[in-house]
Image 1 (cartoon, rainbow, N blue to C red):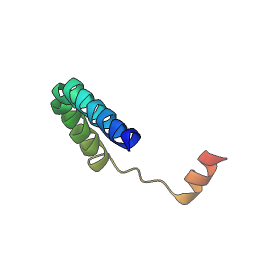
Image 2 (cartoon, rainbow, N blue to C red):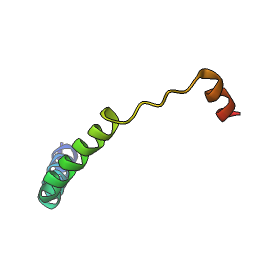
Image 3 (cartoon, rainbow, N blue to C red):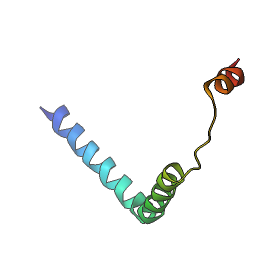
Image 4 (tube, rainbow, N blue to C red):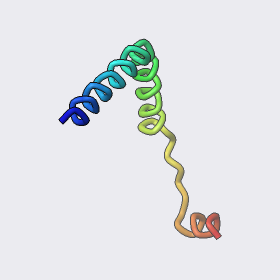
Amino acid sequence: MDAISGGTKTSDGVTAMLYNSLHHYLPLLEAKRKAAIEDVVFAPVRDESNEENVGNNE
């Protein structure tokens, strides 16, 4: 029984340590995530034929 409660305390401590260490970076990470999504959503569409794709992959 001690091993289970000890493991739980360790997990809770690691979780708290990570949150306390990284929560200052959440706004930066969120901004980077939004920028990455916008890059994908608003990326220019390339008009390539299937033959061009096959030729490029050979």
